[in-house]
Length: 220
Image (tube, rainbow, N blue to C red; front, side, top):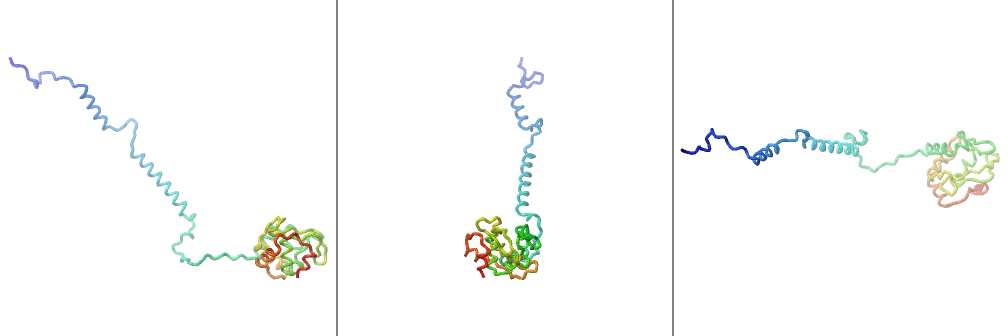
């Protein structure tokens, strides 16, 4: 009697081996995404890309926006090839500003001073006198008695320029501006004082102490 064939369907086939099961599972699991954790690499990459674009855009606007002033990048403006022009400063306007912040407390806004205490600037022979005299008086100050418009005053004027003991440290150009202002204000008829005039006296006198009226009267 012949033995039954291995391919005979009537015969029970051998069970699948453990190795073949493990191989099949690994093959299937290797292709499956981690659906349980919902992890995808592409959205994370897009997040970094967009964050980089936002950072770059903010930096670019900060550097090149011109603070959103249309006059800075005006494509219709005519090109300017000349050197930058310095803005002219009105010495009278500057002098008035300095006087208001420095001198007005004592000499008053009217320039009349205080009777018996602070000498007047309005109509003062000292204000409208020689330039070199009034420059020294304002820059270095005046101590001791002084006669103005026939009245005696004994209060001292402190130094105003960039000299020892000065509480204001006004530069030469500011000294020139405030003198120009007071010499034409309140009906005064004195001429303007230039920065060059003030600088020349400053260089000549150096760190001179306060002047007396007697010393100043010798300067013509």
